[in-house]
Image (tube, rainbow, N blue to C red):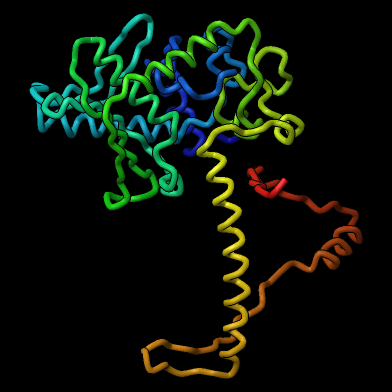
Length: 317
């Protein structure tokens, strides 16, 4: 394959990402607790990576934004009189990398880079558990923690789209997270896959299509029979169906109103412009003619395969 500047860029940033301290971390950290049990179990077993070519750009962009934020606060507080930046804390084998601790407010802050479309349900239950675990680690290292805060920074947005979530430090949430980790540590056999295979093949280092060494992800058969108990996911699924129904009803209503405007043009008393324009039809290739042409000249039509994408289906059972 010809080496393009895009290929060179991908090679450079992914190789650098693989060599980062966090990428080499072998301990299970707070960011993984409450996530996929299978992935955490494999990490605890020191299982080899079976999927080295995971997609990393979103994580790399997140790291770059974290670094910029660290530099920005360091300029404001160069001697860390108020802010402790990018601190590492350990207690009873659990290691955590805390983005920022505000001494004045006794507040733990964790930056999250997200897509704007993910803000509706920010923060997730796992994210809240993660930041509470950071508070727990600081508390056990004799640092007072009153508040934990998650800040969402959209990669595809601007300053106006930044949102945050703050809540009082609650040790019971952290204890629940530690209990979750203990349960996974005590499992004698690998727990069932929890994430869909399409997601795993792009983002999990333990993905293994064969399932012989790593994890092949959740297949269709498992997906249709497994009951989802996550309260937030259940609410979101119901909301999704309700929105779909509203869209269908509104589309029908809109089409009905549109019929009223046939032959009408001008400006309403309220200043609303109504007009019609002729729109050219979409140009498409005459497939029958192309097929005939190639067959006549003894050649085959060459097709370009697009990239696969995930199609979400949510419907009543």
